[in-house]
Length: 334
Ligand SMILES: C[S@@+](CC[C@H](N)C(=O)[O-])C[C@H]1O[C@@H](n2cnc3c(N)ncnc32)[C@H](O)[C@@H]1O
Image (cartoon, rainbow, N blue to C red):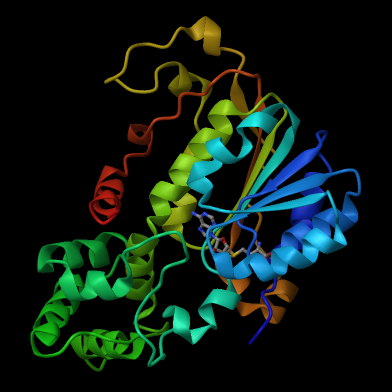
């Protein structure tokens, strides 16, 4: 199995030089690539690391031994940040997010993420009950079509949903290989620059793991409740993840003072000292050298902000104009 190659690690370390507080929260621990280097480079800091996948605990155990009393691992979803970090808010200097799945998860065929596995379809990152198997074998045509259309941005969404529904009448859709064959059949023999299954696989994975709601809830909590000077770095891998991060990081003082026409006006005096300052004006992307070593990094974008002021930012879902995504995720949050 390939090791997970931490994306834009040097750039993360550079941003963390701005950190003035004790604790860094690594919200997506994975194989510990970031945590390990951060503990080595910043000996005065401690890390609280979070991952929903219990299988990464073995990597966490190594760091617990290596960095005794400086590293603490919590197996949970980052949308539960409030419960995890609430007693430490004053000491948190940075939250780091590196979204998506790790090579460790992708390359482990029994997790059912990979295209060509004969193992049962799964795609659960951890701490969730409904899997891709249930969604593909039970969701109605209209939902499958909408999921593939809006999460996968695939124009063949109706054809693919149709193929899924017809095929499961005869035999359950068992493996990722079965699913892949259905997509290819629905799309016909056309030439594709990228693998024609990538987007549909991603769409189903996102619904299974409620990925956009997870991101929204975690960013909202981290930014609303953090103290002045706390930073947030987010590495995204596709346009929908980046859209949420970008929209939230771009929220201006004006939109904060009047977050939604559905809500009462916020007392501007209370709010006026809190806003987000960008650490880098434009997103950072991996160098050519990094892409040559780690092809999976090619679509990564890193954005980072520092919170100014101690006030709550009152970030609202409506500000993002992405309700249809959240609605579908919630429907399958069973
Ligand atoms: C791209 S990997 C992180 C790799 C890590 N930065 C490293 O250097 O090894 C993403 C990790 O985030 C975890 N993850 C994804 N969504 C999560 C969520 N909502 N809550 C907690 N962990 C999550 C995944 O299980 C995966 O292990």
